[in-house]
Length: 274
Length: 132
Image 1 (cartoon, rainbow over the protein chains, first blue to last red):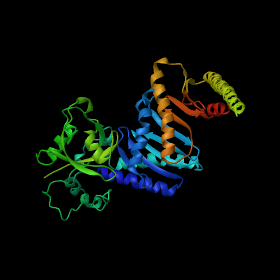
Image 2: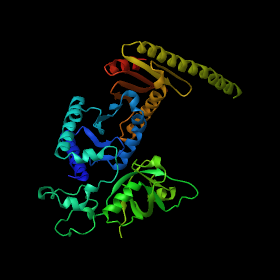
Image 3: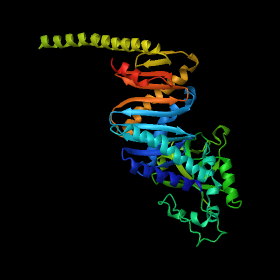
Image 4: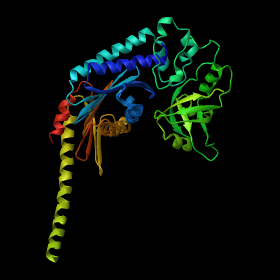
């Protein structure tokens, strides 16, 4: 089970939880580093990103409280509940008249059980996940093709990206893997000598891509926002060591404007292989 | 006409100090209540701030900055998420840590955060402050 299928399993769980408890309007899961793990079908990713941004200040200083276990926001028409477990933040939005005990049973009992179960079935995604929004080489098609037959029928979790569907029978084993997609956080980059058509990402990611694509040098990447805007730009490794390993993509303002995106938002980045 | 204008000016001149006195009274009432609450077993301190002043009393002064950031961020988050999910008026936010929990809410213009041990009944504190 690679991390995308893992996310798919969790997404399905969230949708089922909502079927079970219609009082839950929205639910999603994110990690400590801000990476979105899964969200229900009612919640756009942009909304999730805004929620994560809103919690930034609290989570950054959470150590002063001994680390966050939960956050509850009450409003006149509903409630937002955040439950933290094993580095995952499970967010639920409920109506004001929702049965608190029932919702709590689901968020604090059922969900951790599902999480543990999924982890037990395949611990790899959970171990890879933590604090590392870095590429996951194990999620490529050659490995997926090597998986047992019973795992193959599982559908691709992102139906809007038909190019990524698994086609084990039609693809020869020696073809290059599908371009790997990374979700990175946009960070500003500025200065007089900064080229306006180049983004910077972790050198480690570039090296992993290079290794994956048989030594081909990755000079360009395709950026795609969750709103569907995309562009192709040059890529170079991050220079400043303090930004390394943080799962960010440094992007000049001009590209941010083209993509209608801003600092702190998530973006999909994949290498261009020609 | 001249006479009417004078009357209006007089009313304006009168209402401003009354409002100021009322605000001061509210802040004083909240502060008095917070001082009482601070003596409850397990309560570790509070932060009270509005547009013109701020007062805080924490048992561990080394955590003042961290607590102030958490307090401010949580109240902002509460308002932002209420708007984002169309949940109406933000009422309060509770952040539960492994050691300490914080209860924050807005009372008129005053933003209040109370910090307490995990086992303290935060509902009781909320009721006491909301009763003002």
